[in-house]
Length: 101
Image 1 (cartoon, rainbow, N blue to C red):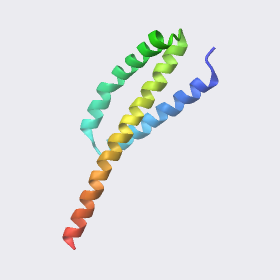
Image 2: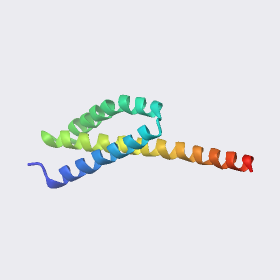
Image 3: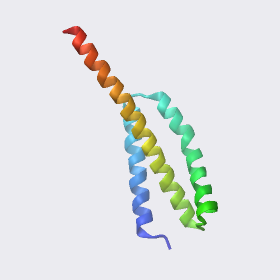
């Protein structure tokens, strides 16, 4: 009895993880890739424990909730890191451009 919206949110959250993972790989931010590789199983286990013990969900619902929430957590982490590093590079480019003029 898995609801339709569990599947929709799972596909969307995993799509976001793939998108931001590709962005990080495109800019060759290897330190961020290493951190996300370490964080992903930790977040999945943490969300599973939270959903199973604290919320009290049972069966497949716990697995779907932990998969969706860990993917959304990874997406938000990668988005904040990407945004933070792009701001720095934008200002560095602006300063270098002004110095050349």
